[in-house]
Length: 92
Length: 92
Ligand code: FES
Ligand code: FES
Image 1 (cartoon, rainbow over the protein chains, first blue to last red):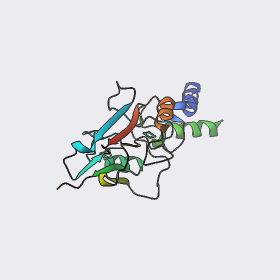
Image 2: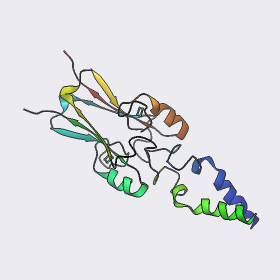
Image 3: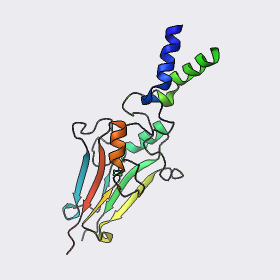
Image 4: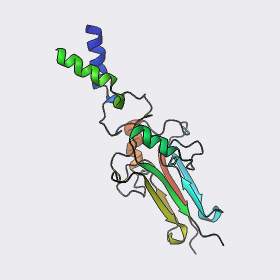
C-alpha cells in the first residue's frame, strides 16, 4: 500500500505528466527527423508546379513535410484543432 | 489520507495525463483559434511580397500563422526539435 501511494505521488508530481491539461510542455513531434536539432523545410515558390500544396503542422503526416490528412485523426484523438498551411499558385 | 490516495490514483489512470512519453495523444495547439474546428491558413504566392516568410509549426508563435522564433523555447522546454516551413520567392 505504501508503495502504491509513493508511486502515485511520484506520477502525480512528475514534470513530464504534470504540465497542464492543454499539452503545454509536451513535445509535439513524436517521430520526424529526431536526429535533427531543428526540423526546418524550405519551399521555393519557383519550384512549385501545382496549384496547391499543403504543409503539415500536426507532425503526424506520413508524407511530412506535406499534409496527408493525418491531422483529422490527431484532432479526434486529442480534442485538438490543428490543420495545414496551404500554399496556392496560379499555374498558366 | 484516503482522499490523497484516491486523487493520486485518479490522476495516475486519467487518460489525459497517461498517453505516453512522446506527446502522443496530447493536443499540440494550446491557444490558437480554439473556437475553430480546424485551423487552416492559406498563402497565395502572388500576394507574397517578401523574399522569405516562415510559417509556424510549433503552435506557440505570438504572430501565428507566422513564425516568431518561439519554437526555440518550446524545443528547450520539452526536448522537442520542431521548426517552421520557409517559403522563398525571388523578388525582382
Ligand atoms: S497531416 Fe499534419 S496537418 Fe495535415
Ligand atoms: S514560432 Fe512556431 S515554428 Fe517558429
